[in-house]
Image (cartoon, one colour):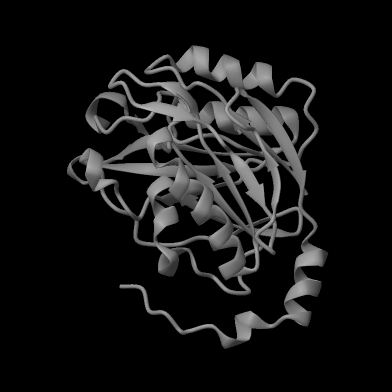
Length: 252
């Protein structure tokens, strides 16, 4: 399965411009799955009441249409309103119209995210092109118990808006999650500066099941593609069965 990491400057509340940028960057790119930064359509912010869309809103419809039109799956997060609650939600849209979602579990208290969003309660695994995909959103990456799915997921996706000032943690945690899970980890971050003055320097990257960096976007806007072979993951796990010795972690 070919996975495209799309790194760009998500302009604040400039939805049409952001979607046009994504379409332009992916023109001519051959892949099976596209991964976008956190809140790719609006830029990351915690003012959920002002930016959230209802479930099934215009940005999700764009993802579904884009996936159907291009023949690849699309994954990215949208601030979503359901009844009177707000969620930082990742959608995974398949070309056949199937749509799955995951709500961010660990809300970023440093930015006050918990005051505006409701934390997710469930992990999900989506199978596409023979690869079992388990999503995370940004701050989730810091919490190994939540991201630990030994032998159950082949690819951990992390859609993020990760500040440049904390880049050391990003580059340490991505390969750590790969080694722990014996799985590929793909982390997609943004570039640019948001209206609050926070700078983002990208470093979107893919790490293989050994923790080796397979690709990176560096600090520039652009797209890189990595090829994930589930058979190689299975062969390695059969040979080195660390997953059999895993602790039984209860999530409350």
